[in-house]
Image (cartoon, rainbow, N blue to C red; front, side, top):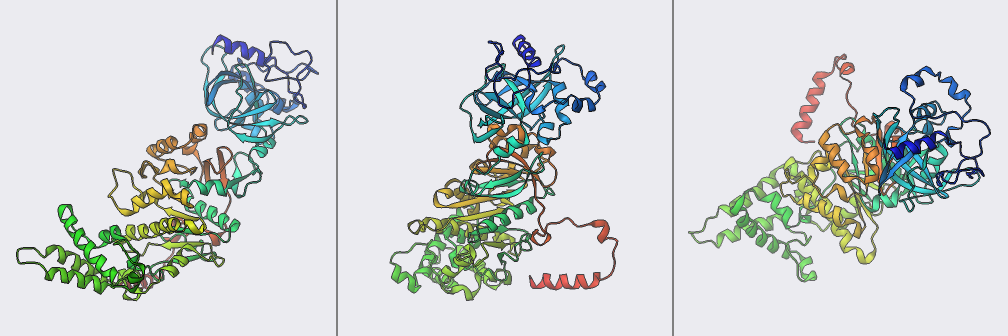
Amino acid sequence: MTDMGNQNFDKFANAQPLSPLGEAPASAPANGPAASPVAPAQAPAPSAQPANPPQSNAAKPQQAYAEDDLDNARMPIGVVLEIAGSGSQIALDLERLNECMVDDDPSIALAGQVGSQIKIRVGDSWLLASVRNQRKDRRANGGILANIDFLGEGVEEKLTGRLHGFRRGVTRYPIPGALIYPATTPDLKQVYASDGRTNVEIGTVYPTKDIRAGLYIDAMLGKHFALLGSTGTGKSTSAALILHRICQAAPEGHIVMIDPHGEYSAAFRQTGMILDVSNLNMPYWLMNFEEHCEVLLTSDGNERQVDADILAKCLLRSRQKNRLAESMGKITVDSPVPYLLSDLSNAIQDEMGKLDKATSSAPYMRIKNKLDEIKADPRYQFMFSGMLVGDTMTDFIGKVFRMPSNGKPISIIDVSGVPSDITSTVVAVLSRLVFDFAIWGREDQTRPILLVCEEAHRYVPSEKNADGSSVGNILSRIAKEGRKYGISLGLITQRPSDLAEGVLPQCGTIISMRLNNDRDQAFVKAAMPEGARGFLDSIPALRNRECIICGEGVAIPIRVSFDNLEESKRPASEDPSFVELWSQSGGEEDTVQRVVQRWRSQG
């Protein structure tokens, strides 16, 4: 610790408790810290020397702290050593921290610990900060050194000295020598108050037991959000909890969720529309040209470009045969106009008939064979059925986007039964429909849509894992441009480091549960704001159903313990009990028979 730091600590050791009115004593020395007025001493205050060795604290009975009758909220716990733009270094007194540990207020009990909040007086305001890290000053009689991140400031209530009117950001900084006090639970209640903005409560703020944690809906959805967490941390249940609370607050909302594992059908069976291969009925002609290429082209390199040129010519000709094309005038290969699969097959056949003997028919046969294969495969009937040739675009969009919601504001798109080779294409079509609908609906001021993508790293992969698929392109575009058109994107993933590099920084609110992988932790830290760094260090140590939330959806970064969700509203993602299930017998033959039957019939 510097000499100046030791001088400041001497002032700290002689400091008296703050008056309830927050007024400076009449006999305050002229050179005392202006930012920390103290009350007149009624009796000698117990010494708070930072130099006491640990063993002296251990020898002092804990009951003595209560007998001292100290108001821990009004006694300083440290002093500011140096100031930087976004944070500063402080010195904390070990004896005072031990005194605070037995306080009945859980916020005071954690004062000075990593992730806790402390406050510093600046004029007539309180500056709130979080403790990022700690280390012992190795010099003789040294205290504890810590780095803090500034969170925001609030006005001091003159009668009680408490903080109110909190706002994010800092306008006035403290000076070295300013005293540091623990933030109390009443202080934090003011900080986390909703300030009139619509919010949904999802849990309790750590370490308190009665401060409710809320998410500002407009702020969170207006700039996208991401929910991150390793497998087994309760990520799916937490996602269901957040979506249930949003649906309760906005029963006429429009939420589309991509569910790759069929987990969320059980959670929203009563409050949402469940769509899977049995009832999705997504017309094939809604695909644009890029998506047609993904499904129908099997070649690579130069051959793929040749095949694409053939498909473009034949697809446009097929779309132009529809009567809608006559009334629309000019249409393109991307226009969502119905066409017959037989028309596309005939167009390819006609083009083959125009070839001379020197020209190979292989490109035409590749496309035609793939088309015939899809038409004959029952797994593709949810999309390529001949019954889907009618113009059902309006009905399909209304069903998927919940317009009108009819009391079910969320649609769960279960793609677990979709053939794996076209799953990405199906997700791409649904995502692009959301984006295109928002663009073409600007004149009508269409209502905003929330698109939630589970296992997001599958569909928006990092550059090293990217395959150039259309789903990655459209989701990246939604992340960058969607909010301009009223589209909110929610990404849920267990591997944030496998996401495309530019996607996570576009999420204004990040909800991070425990992450076990070092690479994932580093990736999330790089995407989070500077003021949340102290909270981020606790990500590997979070319990199940706990998270760190930072960004637009909260007033300041917070650690939250999620509420329990009713059994009927939970997703089907519970881990099996091996011991219990392996202790039972009987019925296996019937189970195997039923599974084989469903397996063979694909559903």
